[in-house]
Image (cartoon, rainbow, N blue to C red; front, top):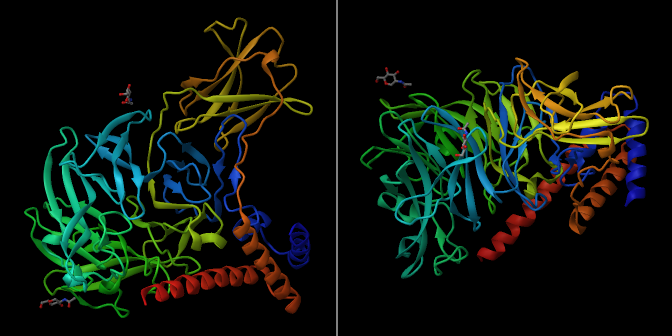
Length: 576
Ligand SMILES: *[C@@H]1O[C@H](CO)[C@@H](O)[C@H](O)[C@H]1NC(C)=O
Ligand SMILES: *[C@@H]1O[C@H](CO)[C@@H](O)[C@H](O)[C@H]1NC(C)=O
C-alpha cells in the first residue's frame, strides 16, 4: 500500500514538476491524508478538522461559518465555528451530537442556537439550546404538549416566539398508501411556542391538508410498527419560517412541495409536488419540479429560495444538487426560476443541506449537507466565489463527515474561560503557543512579566499579532529570566486586555506535546484508496501526458458512480 503510494507520488511529481499545483490540496481531496484530516494544536486539546479552501475571493461576505459536523469519521460530534479562511474559532464536545448551529436574534441579542438530543435516523428527539455570547446556556426550548423537538428546524421569530418541527408517531389508515388497515406514520408538525413561557401559540399538522398518496416516498415495508424502523415517514417536514403577515412557509421533502399556511391554519398555496398551484415558466421546469429539497425560505415578497437535492438515499431524480431562487407571481399563479447555484463538480447531496442569501452582499451561501463542503456564489449563480471542503471530496458520497446545515453569520464570542497556553522547550528556543477557544475579538497577544507569582502587577514585554486559531512566538533567551513569572494577555483592536493565560516560570517549561490526532481509516477506506491509486497508476501509464487532476476527477466520479449504482440496485431488489 505505502509502496504503491510512493510510486504514485513519484509519477505525480514527474507530471507536475513545473505546473501550479498544491500537493497538499491534491492529497487532501484524494483521501490520502485520511478520511478526516485534522490540524493539531499545542495549547488546545481538540484537533481542528482541517478545511481545504479550494477557492477564495475577497468578494465573499465577512462572517463566520457555523457547522455541526458528525459522521463515521467524526466520532465526537458537536458545534464548530470557522472563520472566513477556514481557521478554527470555536469547537465544543460537551453537548454530544448537535444539529443546525446558527446565530439568531432574541430580544435584540445574538444567540448561538442548535438542537441537542437523540437522532433516530428519521427525526430527532430533543430540544433547542440558546447560548449567549459567553457560551452559557441562556434558554432551552422544547415543544409544547410533551412532544419532542426534532432536528430539522428551530427558528426564532421577530415576535420572540420560536418555530420548531415535530415528528409525531400516530396511528392511521394506510389504505391511501396502498396498504390495508391501520398502521403507523410520522405526522409532520410544526409548533410556534413562546420562548419565555413555553406556551403553545400555533400548531399545524400536515395531515390536516395532505394525504398519504401525495407523498413521493415509497412506503415499502413500512407502516406496521410504532417505532423508527417501522413507521412511515410520508411528509418529512424540514423547514418552517414565519413572515410579517403571520403566514408560515413549510418545506416537505417527501412531497417535493413548499406550502404557505395562513395565520389561522388554511393552506394559501402550494409550490411543487402533486398539489402544485403554479404554472412553471422556467425552461427546465425547475421552479415547480424540484425534488427531495431542503430549506425553503422567503428572500423577498415574491422570491423563495431552496436547496433542490434532486436525490434521496435510494433514488436520484436530478443530475446533481443545486440551489434555486424562484420568483412567484400571485396574480397569474406562475413560478419562474431566476437563478441556479450548481454544486461545484456537479455532485449530488442525497440528504441534508441548506441555502442562505447573505444579508450584505446578496451572495448565496450553500451548505451541501452530506458532502462535507460549503460554497459561496455570486447572486446570479454565475460565479463560485469561495469553496471549501471540511473532508475529502473523494468520500462525499459516504457522508463520513457531514453537517446538516452550514450557515454564515456574524458572531461575537467572549468566553467565560481563560485563554490556553503551552510553553515548550524546542530545539534552540522556548516557544509559546496561545489560543482562546470561542474568542472572536482578539487582535493579538501581550507577553507580560512579574516578580511574584501572586502579583497582579505585570509589565508588558512584547506584542504578537494573532495568527489563526493558535499563535506561536519564540521567547528570546534574554527576555525570559529565571526567578520571574510570565503570562500572556489577549488584547482587542483597541488594546484592551480581554483575558490572561495561567502564569508560568522557566521551571514550568516542558517538552512539546501535540494534540493527538484521532486515528482514522478502516479496511474499507484503505481498499477504496488502494483501488483508486491502482486505477490512477494504470491511467497514468496508459496516457502519460494526461493531467493528474483529470485522473483524480475521473476517480472521484467513478467512486460516486459505482456507489450510486450499488445503492440504487440494492434498493430496487429490496422493493421487489
Ligand atoms: C450569559 O449567561 C450567564 C449565565 O446565565 C451569565 O452569567 C452571563 O453574564 C451571560 N453573559 C452575557 C454576555 O449575557
Ligand atoms: C400577469 O398578468 C398580467 C395581467 O393579466 C400581465 O399584464 C402580466 O404580463 C402577466 N405577467 C406575466 C409574467 O406573465
